[in-house]
Image: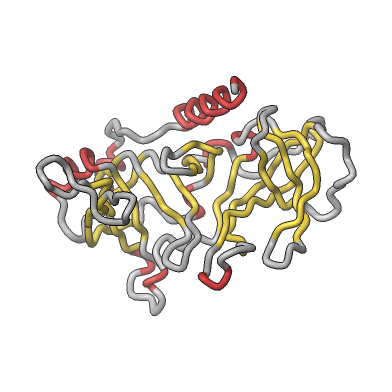
Length: 266
């Protein structure tokens, strides 16, 4: 399976302001109790599987904070026979007055969790839970073509197929040669303009470091996650400290906060 990650650590405070809405039952047998939370005083909600002993009887609208959260592949209530999975959030929900904070330092949440075709940001995650970004060896690049509403390849005015992005396919060098190394493949998507610039001098075996990572959950029988990057740089360039297009923590904060501000204005 491509992009098979067990879980990603999620920074709860980057989701936005959370308030308790009620108890909900999820899972294949509707037997998992989760806390339903309103986000940023909007009608948008998040389901979080809380810690043991969580008080589901608290008042509606109680402000809460989420720490030590993770996004994992949960079981879908529908399409189970097709192997469908859903993104499930777990973590510790506490009163805002509680002094406890995330165990991980803030700088380790170096990527963005996104959803939808427009890559709407929903918080910051830790890319190291997915793979070591300094361990990726390129072995193939292939285009993904845009499709129309009939599922056929869309074409431009000249009849040429329209490329939506390119798949950069990597082997994790430290896991190369393992019996189950087909579960260690990493596929990263990059937009066409940047991809075509990058491909000019690339060779099989090139070690590349992704910059500006974004993770979207898919959950089908081929892959659990889609990974996007702004660009890729050679490992030796990254080590030399040359300026890159990497998305900094401050840039991620601005991106997530911009989305949160938009939600608040709705």
